[in-house]
Image (cartoon, rainbow, N blue to C red; front, side, top):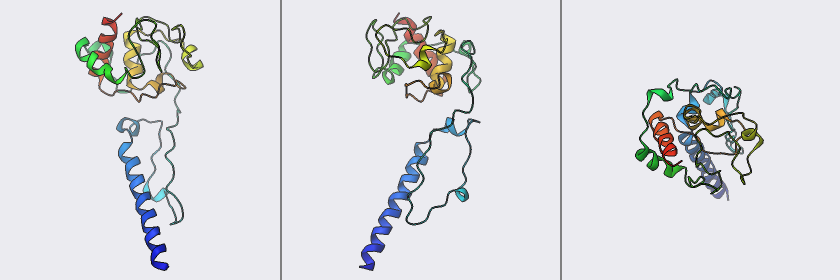
Length: 183
């Protein structure tokens, strides 16, 4: 009987260790470098054999959203430093098309992105926006889209868009070029 209990405990411990490693592997490197997050050392996390590993908590939004006219990115790069390639942007947009369409009036999980450049946030007819989007005061200029695509939750805290963003500024510039070509 003791042997079965020891084996079961070993399986639970192994599963817990694998879960912790999987969570660590899936964490975003960009999120690790933000100043809004705190670092937890191994000595701060203690568990007893009967405890499950702590659940991953969502990152705190300690910093307020940038002002609607602020286009500063986390990485410090600016949209003007890049020339977008619409053909490459169309390929990058594959990530987006599960939730968005570029055809006018076609809303999916997210709103249609037809003519998004120059449009006020939260204004596509027939789409149920969050209050965060509707009240953001944002006009989707190429520069603001460039900032938003880096980390949407930073620019519009409370948005229901779960996309974590693209650290690659060229991919963001390419996607914006594609969106401009579809309008």
